[in-house]
Length: 143
Image (spheres, rainbow, N blue to C red):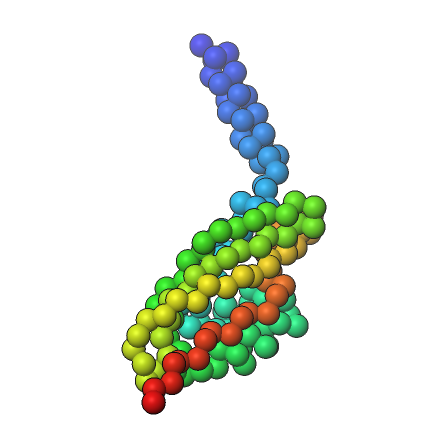
């Protein structure tokens, strides 16, 4: 009676240890990173959205997004192309926005390039945006 329980316990331990040894694929981590960036952009949480950029681009992004008239209503991922050799991902996203005084929602399609930064030893890596964020179009002028 004791032997089947011991065997079951050993099998459970082997399964758990095997699960820990499976490598985490970098491309599986991009979607959560993009979703976090999109949420922060939508809520205009610019300091936290800037953390997704490389350090040299983060300040430029903060300055660019310092626009009280800009309101973003939605950001969604359109497509993502993984480049395995340099471990980069090119994403196309769509943002819906308006600029005061206009209340007309407009669409802005933009491209970002992400680079995977591997973690140290047992830490997982992270994705970082390595291209400048494209400007949102200006509000159309009324005459």
